[in-house]
Image (tube, rainbow over all chains, first blue to last red; front, top):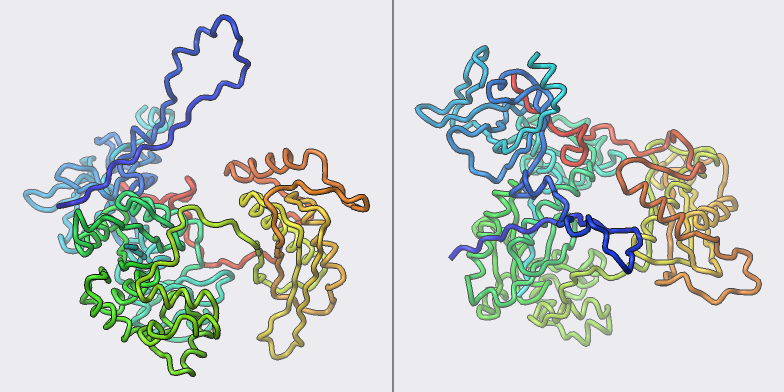
Amino acid sequence: MMLTPTESAQALALPLFLEMVPCGFPPPAQDYVEKELDLNEYCIRHRSATYYLRAHGDSMRDGFLFNGDLLVVDSAMKPEHGDIVVAGMGAEFTVKRLQTRPKLCLQPMNPAFPPIYPDPDELQIFGVVTHIIHRTREVIKFLD
Amino acid sequence: MFGLADVNSFYASCEKVFRPDLKGWPVVVLSNNDGCCIARSPEAKRLGIKKGDPWFKIREQTFAEKIHVFSSNYELYASMSNRVMSCLEEMAPRVEQYSIDEMFLDLRGLETAISYETFGAQLRAHVQTCTRRTIGVGMGPTKTLAKSAQWASKEWPAFRGVLALTPGNPARTEKLLSLQPVQELWGVGSRIARTLNTMGITTALQLARTNPAFIRKNFSVVLERTVRELNGESCIPLEEAPPAKQQIVCSRVFGERIVTLEDMRQAVCQYAERAAEKLRGERQYCRHISVFIKTSPYSASEPYYGNVAVEKLLTATQDTRDIIAAAMRGLEPIWRGGHRYAKAGIMLNDFTATGLAQLNLFDEQPPRPHSQELMNVLDGINQSGLGQVWFAGRGIAPQWKMKREMLSPAYTTRLKEIPLARIG
């Protein structure tokens, strides 16, 4: 038997109405407020294993990953063939597409950069990139 | 049954998470002001660096490998600790955080579903996947025995970091306690251990077999409880909500010695602010405020001077202004010029849960109007992470602040310091 943890629900900010409540006709908008959205709920599956990293460079533009993007990285997720991953390279982290077949490879997503063939015993994968957050103005400038 | 989970080489491992190049290298973390070594990675332990070794000594030695040294980054450690703790909470029904890297777990009823060893191994695997941290797990019918099991799981690698002492296997508990030196027991300090040793009690088992009444008479109720716990009688329950503090201390060793009264006022003012904030965090009011200053007791060339001033208020307060004022009144008479001060601090005592008190006709310090509202605003701003306000008394750019020359970034808590990932 294996005990598995449940995904714990995150605390959500609920709106509190500070204005007076009239004891007559109810304010018409009140019924439409259900709850406030929490971006964490959308982006984060394993809260204790999720980190933010800042992307720096140009080798992933065909994967819509640009310089200055904020990466949401889940280090508890098992990396699979085709995932965009963060791997340790020397003193730094690098972001590449993981290929496990036919040969272990960290593949850039920009033809101007060469693929990296790491030693399978040496490769340290920090986590899987689950979401990429662009700053729209910067990306537009970059694409223009 | 209780469990105790603790993270191996916690501070040192935090420094390694975002530095892939440090894998396999010795890492050392220094105490406040870069004083001495407080944490070592397994590689640093192998090189013979001891806990408490002063930094200047480590710096001058030559080692077989390069040692990577960090100032203590409590912001990072607290954030990583929270991750480990929430991971453990996902698997244990009730928990009590005991320290930054240790958590007590309530494991009652677990054995009907799964064996303790299997659960321990799953707990380890779960924390490993989520946080890449290795934990040790000790289990026992009392907190003290869980601690002993956890100590043994580290001492003997054959246990693979998981050991359960169950009432069904008393021989195993006895064997372990006969091998555990009494000073390694939870709740036994080094001073008590020395006294016990002179009485011929050197192992945990010998202490367990001593008459509890004799221990209470010669030592304390606390040590008597340890004896009972060693015999499987649970006396220390799981505390899900930590008990209210009875004392708050804020003190620091200065990065550079303080020689002027003005600098000392600023330092004491800052500690008073911090202490008052903590006091409000505990929802307490205090009446007793003491301030202490001292020179370094280790300096051979200078005479030692240390002194403490105590102020007792008639009305309990939690207002920063009252606490700063009392601290300043206390500081004046104990200040002696001509010394190079190494340390100062504030201590708050005599707590009450409400500020309500019978007002004294002769009280020179009536409660300030709107004190609570002002303090709420102050704490709200300072805890929002958006900005900081402070009392001008602590100065603008203090020289004496902590020395942290080898501080790593706050990788997980400040957007400006999150790690970079290269795509080029």
